[in-house]
Length: 127
Image 1: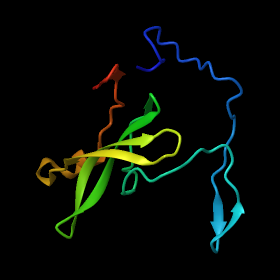
Image 2 (image 1 turned 135 degrees about the vertical axis):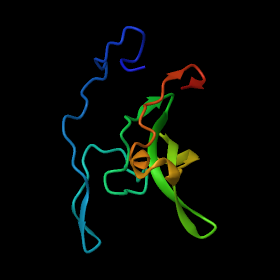
Image 3 (image 1 turned 180 degrees about the vertical axis):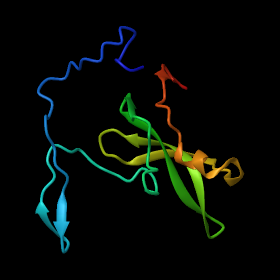
């Protein structure tokens, strides 16, 4: 639930959060600008143009959940899928992926819509 609990108060209780960050920049395999205030980063999908993810990630009990699009090799052929992924919040390690086939007969526009909704976590259930 957005806002952490039933009050829907989205004000963070975290103290001294980072107010800026920068991505690492490399040139010729040498770091020319180090990352700052970033725990980890990872690819969540295939990066088909702007088809990464339209959903916000949700972090619950040390797990980060996000919906996206991806392609996977099936019988040697790249196939498009909707994907729901779970990462370890601290390390960024991919823990679990659920793939749902994309059906071209439903139209190209459908693929860009991805798994748009952020998951709702309640206890040990997810919607």
